[in-house]
Length: 324
Image (cartoon, rainbow, N blue to C red; front, side, top):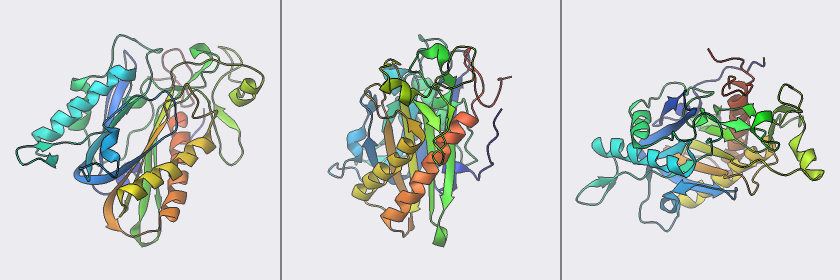
């Protein structure tokens, strides 16, 4: 069993952000609501080719809305996009949203991951689960591991689910001078292996056999002609209390994606729906390139924490040992 270093609160170290999970541990699926009730400037970077998303156009610099009020990560494949409806309903009931003059409409982009191959494929996050995640959101330390959108997350699926490993959600924050914070939250459900960025050593991924804890190294296996592993996605969100425009938020998301590339291999494949969001909520000042370096570190550490905090579930081993 691997251990991982304690952190601060993770994403909620950025003031004004609340995070809530809703999990179905029988069906092994769930969703995660990240709320910015005061509004946040957002951007997005899409690297995967099997994405499932909604309302990403609201993050465009040309869109009439200047801020988003929440972001939702969900399991359930495309069915899970319904979870954002519940978050939108929760925020609307609390008077949060874009003021249209006749009503406030919450702006809630969302993205999904494919977890239908573990647990019960006929049970997916819906509006009720999304609303429950939003209602339970708080600024406490982010709960990590097999919860929320990470409940059914797995990694190392090049040889199919039976030789994969359990994964989950991880979150980490980096503090910069003058009180600037850059933090990340990531649901890791990758085709590839997770490896230590500094050494390239695989710590979770495709195994030699169903009973083995020895890793194949999926990247090398692909170079030998191995293909396969349907149903993957890594969903990432980085946040900062530094002021950004929509254009710069998009740039921060692109820089943060470097952390995903450094920590997962292979990554951004035709079978991955990888998406990275970035949000700015605060009044601090910092150079975008400095924020980008911090975002890369926060993403790397969040991915490592996602697998190190994942317990064994659904017949797959996790680095944190057996679930109670």
